[in-house]
Length: 117
Image 1 (cartoon, helix red, strand yellow):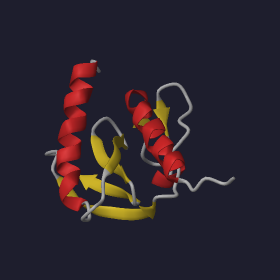
Image 2: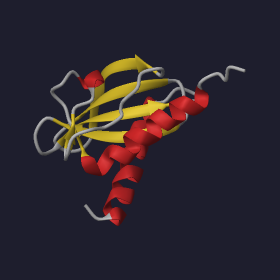
Image 3: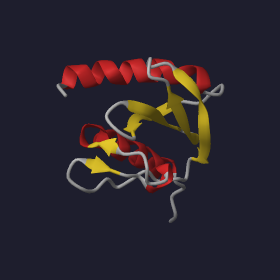
């Protein structure tokens, strides 16, 4: 997928995820996941938690599937084209074009971790 389409997709997903954020919560990454070809889940990493949001065929958000602690790691992604993050139960995959978002979410987690002297 061309970069300009990914950028547009990211903006749309962030806009759709915004109503599910709590006051003071900020987005670290929004990642599309699928069982087959179409995106049917958004993985939303914030500064406080990870939300798994069910996406309807129309592209609208249907519901919150699960809320995970922010200490949950999504990667590192591996494989050739599809990565099955363990937190998604092994049935949903993330296409290679979104792997940078997984890395961004995990990097944000590293930045939030308390520093030890």
